[in-house]
Image (cartoon, rainbow, N blue to C red; front, side):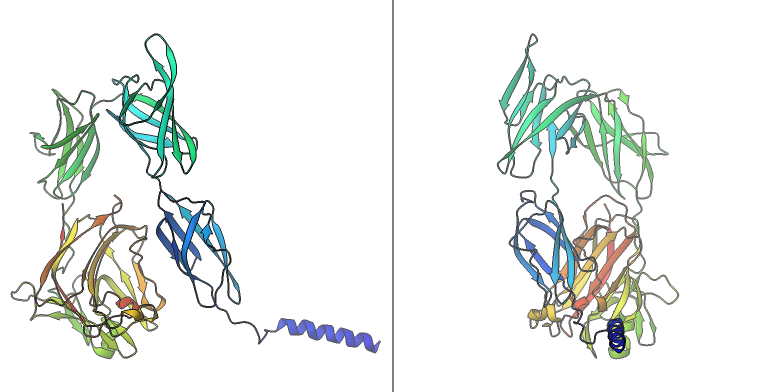
Length: 529
């Protein structure tokens, strides 16, 4: 009986022991993919929080056999799932091992440009990728017995269309004929044709079907800006008497567009010299006939407040780039640096781009703020709060217009880089760089930049960025120089936010730059088309 109680007691002790933490537990060391270089990749985005790597491959890359040029893992991490080659036709699960296992997912997409362009085409071709069918559309006045195909691309870059097979008529007989492909070429497309495409040693069969559409004169699209507009339309005639007309809604006389291009049954006109914020209408003219009028509205040439940086007010040691009680468009990180080194971003009344009563410029200087390097900066949005050794900034102001560029004046004093984080230590001693950037986005809310956690905007890959431009200054200037930053549009969506950021050290977010580097900006203006 005693022996039995001893066994029970030992079992109880073991059970209780398992309920308490093990003081010898291994440390928690997160395994991460720091960088990945793949042959044939044009974009690679690493999301450390989601443990995902998203890859966009070039058209010519073989998704089933992608070479890994280099893969860098975090310290003490290892992985046997990422070798010399990756098959990215499906998601790759990669287990990174430290003292624990961390599962990462690598996925790839491969956008492929496909097109079929025919003489007199009524609309763009449509593709069914699953069945490899392509549909081309011609006006109902165009005979399908004589379709001129000018260009065709059905598979990735580097593929070759070798032949086409289809029924051809000599008015008495239908004959199944195979022809070697050389564009442009005229083919009988009354019935469905096959095109054979060779790529990476494989031959793929595509099926082309020509369809006829009834076409009448009409405006199909209006892309309106502030001072200009692009009109696209279709027509039913031979194009010899086609034109585009426009007028203000309240006027009675129509103006004929001068800059007009006719292609197939499509017509495009560019209108210039329009009045911003005005209601217009346009139509397609075919000889004596005209299509129904299509209304459109030009945009307003919106300029946010204080782009000239003439309005400032001080709150103790903190300079704010707006007048007291006025509208706040700009803010800075002065609240984070003022108690240590004073405001890093200040008004300058002695060194301005345009002289005159009350004229000021925005001066930003990089310095060491007791424990961390801090760049002078200004941005559209607002300072939120101090967070750790950094700050939280809400970037962006509400904005729906579509400017084509940001112009203004800038001056710069570059000093050698004195401070750097671990990732940028190799830059010490090299000249510092200041920069100005602009972006239009359709974020659902302002973007919160948090330097202490490394939360920044990914200007290259953020899908919410509609347009972007950047200007860098790497040399000292003895006076103001003018700049004009073009906005490169990535899509046609309507913006929700305008982001403009200027910094005396371009890598200031990473606590990297030269003490004393100084950037001045003045008299900014959004330029509209």
